[in-house]
Length: 300
Length: 315
Image (cartoon, rainbow over all chains, first blue to last red; front, side):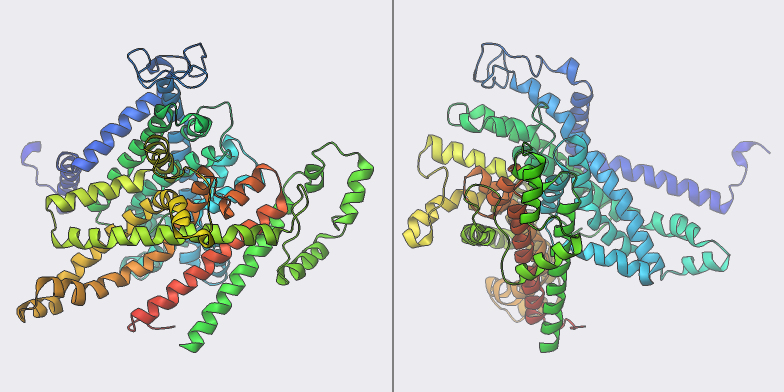
């Protein structure tokens, strides 16, 4: 019998069909959903710019000369600042910090939050009480205020800012995971796994967590945009990464006394932040539709 | 209901106690000595020891905590370690009305824009108007609030010179001085909030318009706008109230940053100034007041929720 006519086992077939359907879904996701497409394209460009900042930017971001506060022109597409530094180059370098902080903080918050949420939701009892009391405590502050307070305690600088923003967003992921776990725990397949003798850890990681992934992906995407805004705000307030690193928030803060004379210093850094956050929000919204997750409530 | 109120209020008080405790111990767990900060890291050992004794910092931490807590219950938040050593409670009391003014005006502006936008967007679903509202809402969510403030200053204060760029005037100086100083920061703070509310109203209105009782109202031949405003809107607002707590977080956080753009000496500016000066009593006081406002605002939202929707069980 040749391979071509070999009958396909039923579960193999459904696996094949499921895979085909999934890939078709992803393809139509980008083709049909214009928001997803815009989001992905813009983010790709930004990531490219961040990685190859030294190649892409027309000038040295910290190179000063006598071309002070020139308006946008062919020589300096977005103008120059009060020290004659090229604004576009500084903003391209700023992309690095923003994207890095945005992604790494959410990765940390996700890991810690999911871990706490799994423990609380699955084990219940005393562990649940302790974790939930802690999360309630975080709930008593707006996320951004937590980040501000943690920077006040730890001090400024890249690693401190990352720790502060990650910790501020842990409660969102913990709460979401716990809620998901509590509802999935009731499902029959969990009982079935237990009957088959699966260990508690195996049930948690192999059976419960994969089914909680969709809302977590959406939440994580949204959180990246909040984290980027939080980093920019901290930098703007002088509580950011540091005075010698060009970040979008810091560039805006430095330009504060010149806004009336040099509008470009006030407008373009914010546009960079807006376009980045907007494309992430577009992507998050499209993912929410694709993964069929109901509105994730979170902010600030 | 009374029982529910008592239980929730006690819960909020308990959370506030935990917050105060956490704030106290975290600031003391920091590497670095507040006294050293006070003496700008230049005081000699004897002076440091003297100051430590004066502020009771040489005592065990639990005694410090107990004393601090008793003072806190009397409304005493300690003294600023800068300048004339003003009481922190006075600084905070002076700042509070400014932040509350800013937050309330932002709230009003945001709701006035968001509610009609959300309703129209839902009623004329997929129309050009709906798409415009959606895009504007996305933009609103994506713009950093402090940048909105900066752009507003560039346009309305620097170029058009219609409104003052910075500062604050209390209401007692008249409505217009108060309003003209606050309108730009209020828009900056309220933009993201407004976007969230508009999207919430749109989606919950769409749910409600699908229900049978709205169909019945339509079948009875009621006017379209009567159905929307009298029958559908009250129910559509219920889920919106649940996100008000989250939206309040945005307002408070927004106020903290935007006050610094417009040089309004509210809680946010006090907080950030305190951090930059390492003035720990001030930071502690400002943080406590901010979280107290937030906790009790959320309490009010929860209570409001049960009042407007009697279907919610209180346990």
